[in-house]
Length: 268
Image 1: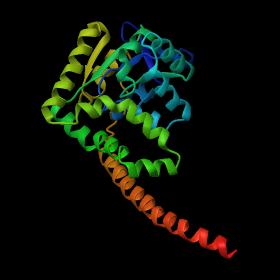
Image 2: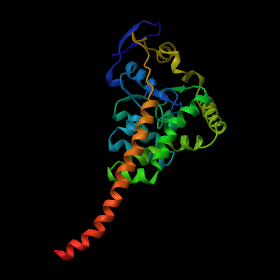
Image 3: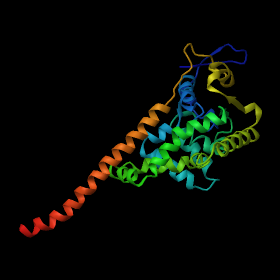
Image 4: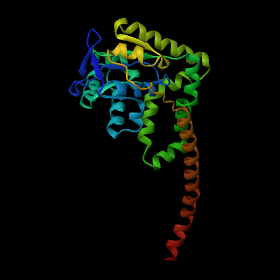
């Protein structure tokens, strides 16, 4: 269990598990080191850190919640967020869908601090194009969608596409458009979040500034370095191959069945 420091920097004792609530809101865009940041926050904080992976790998209630939140009236969202995250013991959240709704999170958890994870806009665009963009393009493919419908996972694909639509649209063009979106996003966060509540953070900085911001001791272990680019690219390739093999293989069988069944019925 991580230990809190008092105002003088002395060890003030263990964090009480009962106090787990959202204490840090990630306002940075996806592909800004959020997976490594999630790993770090899971070490530092008493509760879990929410991430897009929790949508992809989570329960149906997670998918339903975000689907409903996106369609909900803006005034209803803060209370929906407060209830959902308080009941589940989360201490933080990063990446989309968290950062997409960071303003609503600030209303729901007014004492929480805000972290803007950053990287160069050009490298961000390249990373998105190699991961999120490829994944969402694949999920828009009719053959892939037919396959997902067969394996009953169309709900996950639909919700993730709905959550990530702004990122897809921002990168569905040249680098200039993506860079403008990235810079505009960062500028808006800096304008909206009070300076004493905001940490602008690059995961390459490691523990020091993050721990100081959260007023916790630095762990005696390396800062997590979790890069899922290669894994995501491999998963997209696998999805495309398997979808085409299964769906295009089923079509001839269905045609053959449509021909043979009437003949067999007449014989029988």
